[in-house]
Length: 194
Image (tube, rainbow, N blue to C red):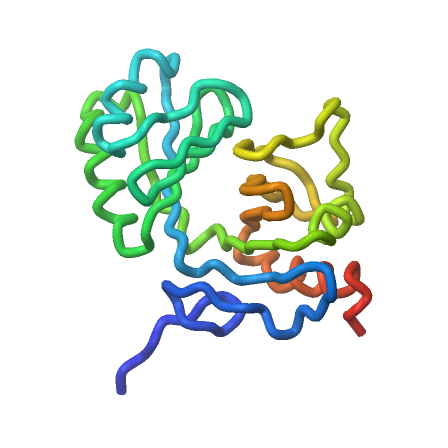
């Protein structure tokens, strides 16, 4: 018997797939089981580790709140002055963790795999912002969350990392244990639940 890994919603692990139970005329939801993720944290100020981390990742690591940098098939999301999420190919996660930890044998920085813990969803379409706002994604900033930025927030009482990829495109990371609830909530908020 050969077991096949599955995503949290039962799709193919390592692939993006439309969430069929989400029916909305103004938005589309995909489960992004093709996104691997590494959490990089620093025990010291970022400027002491960032050059080495950028060399290993092959890309710029953002140093300002909410910034996202994309290069070489990866994305780096700023979480705090000393922590970042590095999105990568699922199959590259283990190697990236190993390389990052090897670059810091003094433990000034530490990388851990998050692909099993954090599920990603892509919400897109003209109704996507309205759906996110339904769940409490309200920004007090003048222009809200600009394209190319990310933040941690609560949506429908679920802790989430939200990255705005375009004017109508969002990438949302939620804990695996809350992923089904999050999809059900989005379905209800779109008026398609029930």
